[in-house]
Length: 327
Ligand code: ADP
Image 1 (cartoon, helix red, strand yellow):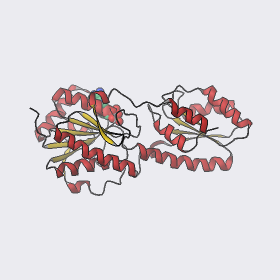
Image 2 (cartoon, protein in one colour):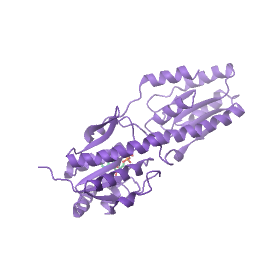
Image 3 (cartoon, rainbow, N blue to C red):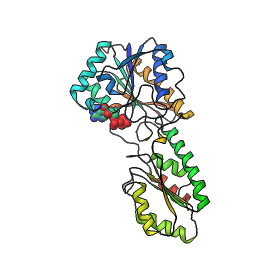
Image 4 (spheres, protein in one colour):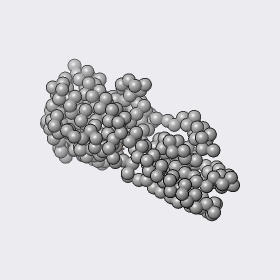
């Protein structure tokens, strides 16, 4: 028979994402509502290994729903990749009596959770917290909406100055393995071209289309490049463009970490709250080792085992839309 969950731990792991705090708040308050003891684990899996675990109360999560980052801190934890590290983590959780774990993070964090759950029978629930949006089994990931809106805000500002000087801007956004920020921010700002890791960059096609635009005096152009595009990012693309189009005034702008910070958007606060609440319900109902997602506005549960294997794909229709709209 499954053991009844009475003490739960919550941690944020991997890359931080705005809205993680809203999810932590929802977990803590829902847990307390249902009579559970809730513990905050600091710095991702590192806190489990170093026993950096603190009791959480309703007031511990006051005034955080609007804050970016994560009050629990996040980290990448090398020791958790090793069995010895995970065994130490389990021993620390067991000492306290924690018998359910909620992990807010990306697919790497879920891989860790899946292994941990399989080895030690610790019930784990994953919440998709990543600005990359590349996780299958959910329409939304916590942090993506905020990150993409931050990118849009910055790109709109760049367009103003590009327009004033008739310049071409090559703008790099985050996304080492995922083109979603580039794709959504590019479409939403009317970019001419969007280069993403999911498609091999065709530099000749880009140069050709910019040459054609130069001929018809369309001089203000924005090219959005995901940092993980296979050509090597904005700087590399710019090198070729400057060489091949010497008369076009070309600049590079790398948006960088501003995309991770800031107050979470309404959407991110809402989905984080729903997912956090639902994660606690999963533990109470014995629906263990799943990732909580939202699909078609309903809660959707994907076994962690499946969640770590599947990636959210970018459909060809998106790329067609870009081509048509950027003419
Ligand atoms: P994200 O969760 O944002 O994808 P990472 O891939 O860095 O970020 O994963 C976060 C942490 O999850 C890692 O630092 C590590 O502690 C743990 N982790 C990731 N993959 C595994 C794995 N295969 N086995 C055990 N732990 C893992």
